[in-house]
Image 1 (cartoon, rainbow, N blue to C red):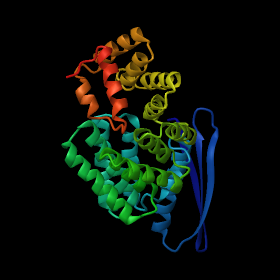
Image 2 (image 1 turned 135 degrees about the vertical axis):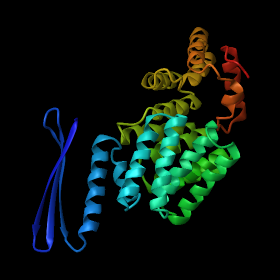
Image 3 (image 1 turned 30 degrees about the vertical axis):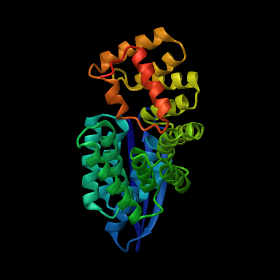
Image 4 (image 1 turned 90 degrees about the vertical axis):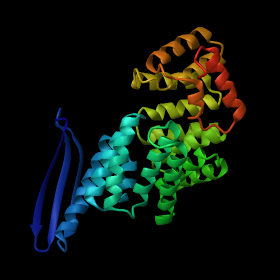
Length: 330
């Protein structure tokens, strides 16, 4: 057991005092401590409130960083919040069909318990635009329709919710509505300047729409906001750096991404492009061969369907780089 949560409860008249502390079991270090004083008007409501606060503070310390506090208000239903957190855990691990399916199921259960949560609707939109991009469950148009529906509902429920604007920005990117997508991504960052995820996904939208330098800044800010960032943050940083023409930095980012998810093939197509376009032809060919060993069914035609780049000429150059390095067209 790595961490221990200790606490005590004291009652005096109509008031209750709850003390809690999070301890690193390896060396006894106190990572976090807090005290809560409440009137006992509704003991069950207090119990739910403290449960959510404690769970949130542990997320701040152990996984999500400061943005966890922003998501304390995702839902006030403890069971729904638990499903949301479980889904987020799957979402953080890897961009795979299995993990995203598990995340989607958790978020659907959470939303069934609290259908008026804008954040939960936004997260479900995210699951469906990923499906639309990678072709995991539904056909592309069906998946996009679901992504748009949940994003629209999130904005209707709370027009000041950052997760809703993030979801909307990506759904708009997927349908080629780049200007509106950028406006929504910037609004998400404005509403939640402490959210690493808002900055991360804004970077993806900005890079796709042609604002690569701004995207690099948002990606680096996301990593600063959440030092425990998931591996795909590196992929997004590399994407922004590549489109910004920062070749060596992009190569470093994609190498780090590949190292964090060994054998998955993530980041290797971008490395092939970077090596090929910068004249490092041997490295491009070797990386292409390694990628095909991880993804033997890969084709450039299928890869193009996952791309969201606004600049058609840039995408064509990337396709030519992949073909020149030896990757199959179809």
